[in-house]
Image (cartoon, rainbow, N blue to C red; front, side, top):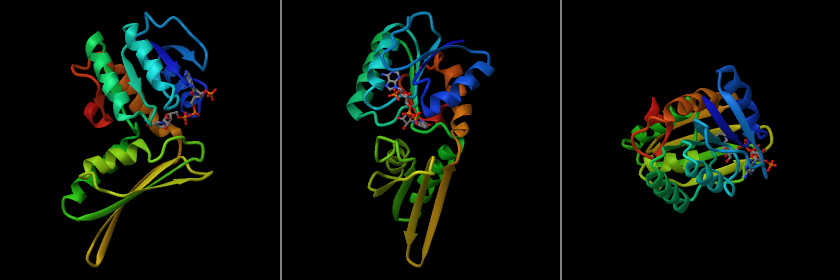
Length: 212
Ligand code: NAP
């Protein structure tokens, strides 16, 4: 496949680049200020920043290129705009706040546990240069647990992407924890989304669980 990668020099992009090439994809890396020919690509992937992603995806969908969005911090209004654009153009778009399989399982287990244990709080911990807080994963987890779950954000050097969901009831607590200790953890999910995005029947699809 011919793949556009927005944010090719970033922390995720630089791990993804060699993986895409090893999987046999032909790659066009895009960094800030570059304006490559978009049309003719089979998929576009965005790992940039909350203030950059919408313009990139707007451009790619406008050029008829299906999009895989990993960038977090998209507002609800931004998602509504993507939804409208994808429908209007008839070009699919896939969005995942977390491409790590373990994080998908953590969210599923937290949703299940919240049905039985009434109180919970989320602690999400990320590297110090993460721009958005709370993380997209924490917001998605809270939504799946019923919405009213306090979220605490930690930003420190040495961290990659981690989350604890602590549930409490009289005389007991239960903790569900996921750690991405390396950005390699996101790669299988991103490669799967690139292969599948062109054939999605509705759009945008949000969450890796819908592709598993
Ligand atoms: P990063 O290291 O800051 O990389 C972002 C890259 O995008 C940088 O090279 C940046 O260039 C570039 N960029 C900024 N604006 C751009 C534009 N308009 N067009 C093209 N490139 C642009 O960040 P990261 O750690 O790789 O993370 C990127 C995003 O992915 C964040 O939103 C993060 O939260 C998210 N993320 C999601 C997942 C997931 O599983 N969904 C996993 C990890 C991270 P400059 O440095 O020159 O600005």
